[in-house]
Image 1: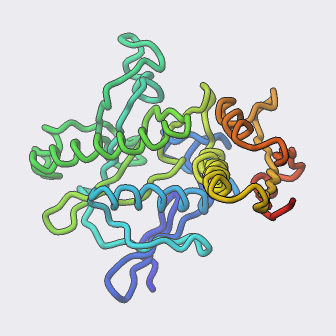
Image 2 (image 1 turned 135 degrees about the horizontal axis):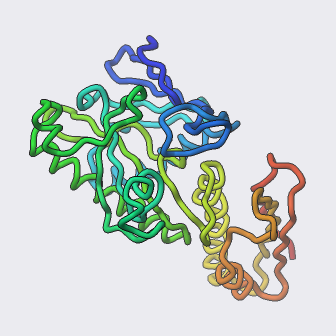
Length: 306
């Protein structure tokens, strides 16, 4: 294994079999210690951000692969915070593709005279060069073709894939009560096919819950942890309905803490808690405990009690 590239948020290693290994780091883009997915410099280090990014990346890549969307993803090793991918040729020295559903970030800063902040956009696609010295300048389709970065057909394929992938992710998040404002992708070519590369994580998107921006770790927990608990409860509901009145009763203990919510709200929508409580008979117990330590934010105990 040979180190071939050190990026802001990942290191890239060449493997003997011709594939590549991406090592996710806890470094995040931003400035002056504040996270910002739209920045092109490392501005903050968040413990656990690398693993959270990889978990979301694996989750979304598996969804995309199941839908037949071409990607470079092969497998992920969450414990070692690494992902194995197929080799792909980048466009030029690197191209970023943004799909916007609301007018925020650099879009609003550029076009604020012509739109309201957070105004809805119809999956607007724009491309920028990966160029830190020039602050990732926007580039048009005509310029990309004239500069020899890609063909006109490659651009059309890339744009269509961007909108398709962003819509899949937007709909997936919406099922969990999360709204996707914008998301950034990278693409390359494997043979003659344009494919999605890099990652799909909280560090590459702006996602909001009840009007509150979700930091990468909170987004990961909300998508993969808390809703996993809801799924467990729903499965147990179905199982218990098939059994007799004397069947063992599941007992759940949730440990929950969500920093940054001064009024103590839960990220789980009220209707979901109501749904949980409504289908739990009175002889079952649902206990919510506010954890004192961040490392115990999400745990669940499931044993059988009569």
